[in-house]
Amino acid sequence: MIARTLACLLLSASLFDTAQARGYRYSDAHLHYVDFFQETEGMPALLKAMDEAGVEQSMISGIPVAKKWHEDEPKRPRYYAGDDADAYWYSATDLYVAAALEKLPVEQRRRFHPFLTGFNPVDKNAVSHIERMLELYPGLWQGIGEVFTRHDDLTALTSGDTPRANNEAMTRIYHLAAERDLPVLLHSNITSKRERNPLYLAEIEEPLRNHPHTRFIWAHAGSSMEIHRHQERMDFLLPVLSRLLEDYPNLYVDLSWSVLEPYLLDEQGVPRKAWVDLVVRFPERFMLGSDVVGRFASIGEQMHAFNPFLDALPAAVAEQVSRRNFLDLLPKNVK
Ligand SMILES: [Zn+2]
Image (tube, rainbow, N blue to C red; front, top):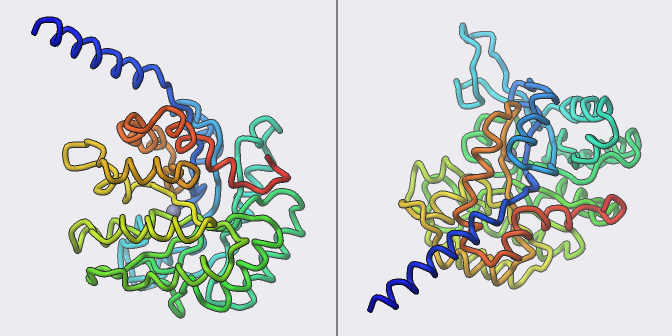
C-alpha cells in the first residue's frame, strides 16, 4: 500500500515536472496592430509584450473597419459595440501596419508576418485592391485577413451588405490567395446569436470544398463571445469541426479566446478530453492567437491561458500547436 502511494506520488511529481519543464515559446496567429478606431500603442509596446510573453513570432494585421464617432454622439465610444454608430470599411489600416514594420531593423521585422485586411469583402473589386497592395509592397505581405464576414453584432453595425465567406468577392480573393500562396484568416461565425444549430456552416464549407489549394485559418473555429452570451456551449461544434478537418485538408483552426473557454477548458479550467483527442488526431491543424486589438499588455495573459490545454497534449503536439503550425502555414518563400 505504502509502495503504491509512493509510486503515485512519484508519478504525479514527474507529470508536474514535465509540464513545468516544457517552457513554451509561442507563435501568435491572430493579432491586430490597431483597434477599431485605427489607434495603436505602437511597436515598442508590442515588442515588449511579445518578449515578456515568450511570443517569438506573430501574425500582424490591421482592423478592416473603422468605428465612427457619430455626429449625434456626445461621448466618443471606446469599442465598436459602444453605441449604435456604424463601422465602415477602411483600407488605410494596411498602410499603418506596413509603415510600422518598415521602421523596424531586419531582425525585429522577421518576427512579424503581416496579413492584408483593408478591403470590403462584399466588393468584387476587393481582389484588385489586394493585387495593388501586393505590388506596392513586394515581398511584405504573407497572408490575407482577418476577413470579417459573419461576426454577430459587428456585422449588424457595419455599413452596407452582410459579407458571406462564400460570396463572389471572396471567391475571387481565394483564387488569388492560392495563386500567391497566401493563407486566409477568416472570421465566419458558424451560427447566429440565437440559432442552436450550425446555421451558417455552408458559408465556410463551400469555399473549403471549392478552393482545395487555398489554406484557410478559421478564426475562433466559428465561435464568438457574443454567441456564448446568448446560448450555452454549442454541442454541435466539436462534431462539425471534426468532420470538416477530416474532409478538408486545407482547413486550419485558430483556437483563440472564445474557443479556449468554454470549449478547450471546462468550468474548473480542466482540459476537455474530447478536444485534446481532436487536436492529437489533427496535430498540424491547430494554432493559438491572442486576438489583441491595438493594446498589447494582455498578450502574455492570453497566450499563457492556453498552457493547461497544452500541458494535456503530448509534448511534440504542444510544440506544434503553440509555435510550429502557424509558421508552417506561411508562404514557402518566407519560411
Ligand atoms: Zn480578430
